[in-house]
Length: 396
Image (cartoon, rainbow, N blue to C red; front, side, top):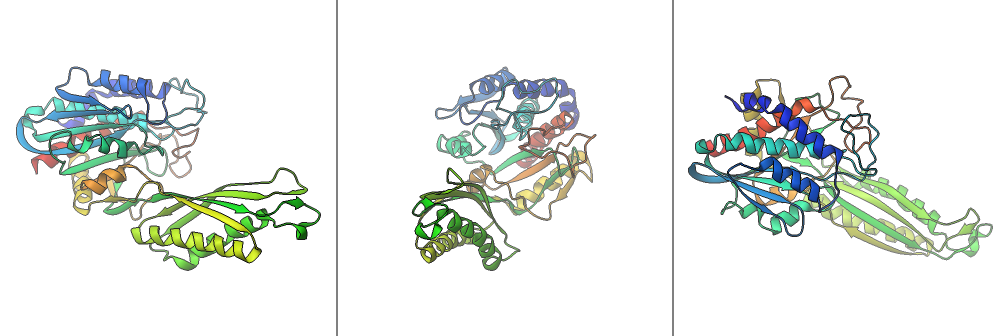
């Protein structure tokens, strides 16, 4: 049987695991219940399993029946601090916690791939590392797992690594998409504290107003982006938080704002950091205020190896037939800590449409929304592609 046929036979088990994970989502690096469910799903398989120390990770190694290199498959497991607003039989039972990004599907698909490949272990010309990762949502879980040895779990660095991510909008269900080169952005945080001199709102000339200067900074940052950076190597700066003051007639001593900064090249990532600081310092100096800028470095750019991205496309076409995979014309401004894996191992990250068939992908609630819904029908195909990528790459 092909992986697609075998995965369809596992559909009920995959759905059951995914729903179980969805009802009890966990946040961050410590996911004890999720880890327990993954270990239960892998029970009885011929795997070498290790759990994490700094996080609730699961690393499982399948030794092939023939000698050869290793391939890594990754699925992230953590949820988001979101209260679900869907009417589902398997809705999250925990207020303020939801699998709004589809990581419950990733976990179930990767567990399915472990079953599919275990059934054909003797045919494998090498080893497969299954990376069940907590803490993708801003907690650098992949970095922790690398530090704890996931890339060397099979005894040698993998020759390729593959990750997958479902989307609740943009793509119709069952359609895969990827591209060579940058596929997701670096995500950094720019924090600014503007320090002035408080006073009465009726007499602004007797004070140094940090709110007015802060607002000028926010506007100037947008102009700086459009006048500094090439639109074909895009940079996005979005101020998502601005706080200052306590009353309408009180000028405060300080105001604070934070921005997310997205880039696709190392050059722009370095340059934007310098230019952001220069802009806020210049405006502060012009108004006679002090400013304290800081820059928090987040996930790096997720860069697909060109050969591996092409291999993903060919494998998807061979597995599902033409029309189920397309090369994305542009990257996505979201970020991913699978980028840390791809900095060490050539590989590719691929998207899978999971928008329910009764919704329009162009208008459906997107990942991270409390109303995001992911279609269970894609679970077998995701598991099958994971398995086929490892199997075919080891056979290459």
